[in-house]
Image (cartoon, rainbow, N blue to C red):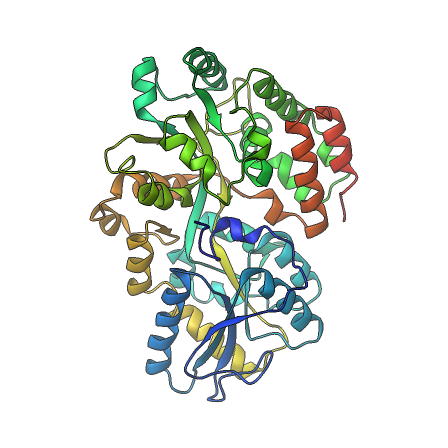
Length: 442
């Protein structure tokens, strides 16, 4: 089963010209692109898919009942349809008041075109609201030192999962260093078990390896330079070393045979882990729920282990650093009326991430991006995993947004194509860096 539309991997597909479908609307309804509620409020577009659609609808209904003069009219769209629709609407100055986005490269495009409101001063005037969220979530919402979006929903870090039962049979411990990784590759290959599951056909799963390795080797500043479009940023020696280590892992049969034909959307990579055909898997925290549901008590019986990505000897990156999806985001259209902007800000302050929404996300196996929820997490049957994700996200000195979200759509597609070739060893690490260097500024 695919994840909900608003989860991490539904963000990947570039906008395509498909007929858009409205999955649901609020009781207020809408009368066209960017239309307000008609009650002095604001319009909002959001993605369909559960549990996020239901959670957001309940939040809006509750807010509207308490704020009859500032109602929010919401329209839900399927993921790919939304990307086409919002691009067209923004270009025609018909965007909704509240614009759902993923931060990073897309938000940068909006901000530099003066299509979204600068929220910096407003958030400074609402310190309690700003302090509510993980500090790390604001990085992907910031463009040229200014905040253009409010974080929302839950955090999705990339996690190194492992099969405890296989580790016990092998008499080994979870890896703490890259050397441990390479040693475990030999151990599990010797047992006839694939060291790592990988849905390589999907490409973004392979990207996770590069994201963590580059951070551990060169520290977060290397990708920050790439994101900033600095000349020759992809030619940093840490990028070459990252590609070299990846190809060494491939050559050592670190991944299951045929990984390039395995898809992640089918959850086939997860099945390899919980059926014991693979010992480890690097994947998003959002896979916990599906593995709990489909793994025939693999999770419930305590056979699923999870740790942070290992350190690399001599590397500059802090082993506590995280990568993945720091949050989802909502911006306010710069073209909205003052009244609509006021209603949107009131909803941001009073309607998003209420106690009810926080509880709903925790019950679905996710970690909301707010501070001070330890007691709530500790009452969940999934408290061990939820606390692990919470601590990882909350305490990460750096939490790097996934590259294909951080970069522009053009650069992101080139990245995924070159990653595919790197893992298949059809290009060298040097060629990978050179190819990606050509995308800077695009």
